[in-house]
Length: 319
Image (cartoon, rainbow, N blue to C red; front, top):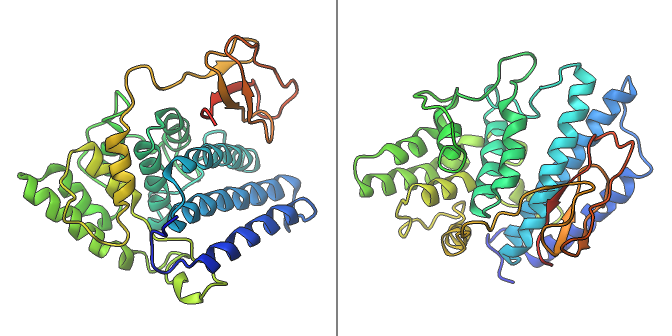
């Protein structure tokens, strides 16, 4: 295991894992202060979602094998779905987005980071689930986010059909990355990608994670990553051989290039009551800690009465 950013020591990683486990245990006995049970559920699910994002990011930063990220990404997407459902219930707005990507650059960044991870790990099944949360509606009553932002659409159009062609974007920080996509020459595309990486960190001074590496080994730093830049380089064939900036996930881009799925490698979901289509591990959002191994042909179980709704099983890997 070779750490991927210099600020993340082995001791820091161990502290993070310990504190992450402690937070999980504390959640079992602690309630968040709120005026209503629905409000408490919203705060709780949002906190759990942030824990999942931090765990995934820390795992990558610490140098764990890339293959170990897939299960963490699955867990993260499921946490976003639960968080969105709680928010929708609390706000009485069924399609409310869990991220206000038009108003807040750091929430937009979180969105494109998750999209980038789904693309680079070849989990288009998870990407569809995440994008559905963002597409369907904006924040606090605004219209849906689909079809309003160039970078958002250009990240998706290569892997999801029927996306919009739009020439505007919410935040200026992403201009060099958009320019990299539409550059007239390959050299210009590489240069714009480099410019984007160079100015990325300073553009997020208002984010809660900015400068957390200065807090020391007991601090909140888990890594600074422009996963969206890697996804754009992968999707649009941009030469990143001269990109050596710390925030650029170079080995993850290389992984994406070397592990392109062949036709049929994406395993389709299976509804409860139907036979398992492939031997391996599966999970369902309808039940907590549901990940387990099934044999091909085995009938997938149903969890009746789940607040999530229908029991739908998703592929979670061979191990």
